[in-house]
Length: 265
Image 1 (cartoon, rainbow, N blue to C red):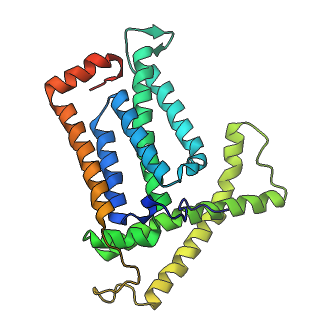
Image 2 (image 1 turned 135 degrees about the vertical axis):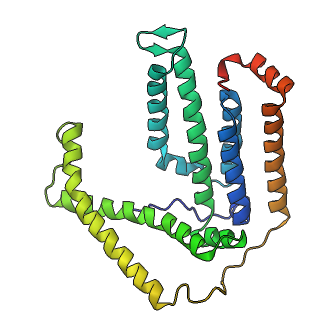
Image 3 (image 1 turned 180 degrees about the horizontal axis):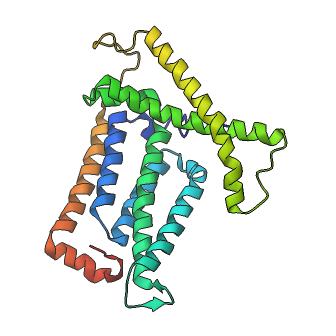
């Protein structure tokens, strides 16, 4: 089972410099943090989805759809109860539902933006891009290794679960708490496997002299092109327009007048 999100395609988004894709992702994060307006957040999410479609990687959304749905349901239910409001039905409030939708859109926006980045950028490109952004190589290597190890850990746990099922372990029967209790013993071989793999990995790095010299050469060469600068300019223009809309009183009042139900500033 392939747990890596990266899709090896030849698209304009894939050909972008990893620094460009990283900065575009951070700009989308900034917009998500800046706004508490459902309409603006939905507009940003739409732009991110169009960007992902340009890379033909939106099919990866199927792999994280459970996460997106659970975040949405959890956010709506929790905030509809916790948030006070004038319009209430039993223990739920309409204002809480809208606030929960806003939080869900904000969170899913960041998850989708991160998914697009990982689906169009190789791990080696991420490390090299961070180095080009003056991040110390050890930090860049640690970050890229963490991205590499997470799918490997998930794949290891999946393999162990399938092996135990083949030996007759019943993980389907019982209520939710009983199922959780059955999964707890499976964490031990998973943890042992991860520790063993990490130990082997550290010995391999040490044997290759990792960190011996600060001067490094890299087979992978990345370079900013005209399309990279164009995409960065478009991203900065969108952020600048959103910032003007956010911090200019007249513009923001117009937004609230048009969409009074979607603002929680």
